Image 1 (cartoon, rainbow, N blue to C red):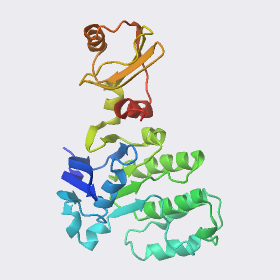
Image 2 (image 1 turned 45 degrees about the vertical axis):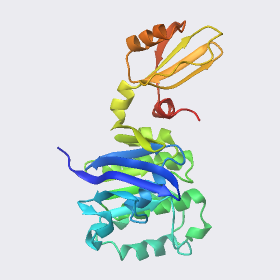
Image 3 (image 1 turned 180 degrees about the horizontal axis):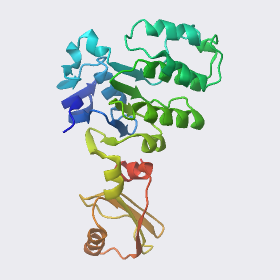
Image 4 (image 1 turned 30 degrees about the vertical axis):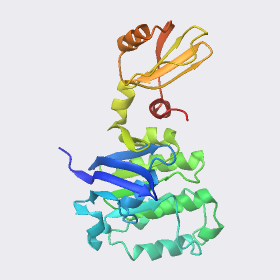
Length: 296
């Protein structure tokens, strides 16, 4: 069995009097890429800040690499690379200067990884970070993260500021970088299409709780979207504890569930909802996310 690089037990946190989440527990296995998904305000960046040690949770514990995050020795911290919303410090430096500066702090520094990624940006080594586009600065930050050769990478909104080409470049690069190297990645992004290409496992947060925690392949194989037509007098579908987001627009209806087609048919019959052309439709990870959390 894979051991857990990150283990959080019964996390509870508030901002003022507003509860962000309560009794949140999860693990991140060694050697996996896990994506934390959720709408704005569900606690993604809060979780990253707790893992980084910037926030102390109101309740619960969190351990990384076997150590409590609030009592982690420097030698262990050096095995963790952290990116907070694409932030680049020391933007007055040049591409070369910032690499030399960072290299002093990381004994496993791999400068060739940094320069390989930066070279794809087609920028001059003497160009200052402050003179770059937002996407280029983000890519430099990602290069500095990968060059640390850390065992655990924590990336918050890693695609912030990147255009589609740069995002695809980094996704492919990160996949190749972690392949066969026993690296673990915990990341968030608002662009779920990117996550589908990258992550092995996902945690989907709702307000105050975890909705789903499973491998992406298992989610895509077991979560279903059914569409059908109904009468014009039907404006909404009645609630059911095993159904997630549902909607009726005109005569077109859809619902999402982990249950079978037979369960959906029995549900519609119990609810006395007339239906025709019941079809299971393929979904992307973004479709599944919306099906679980709703459009609003």
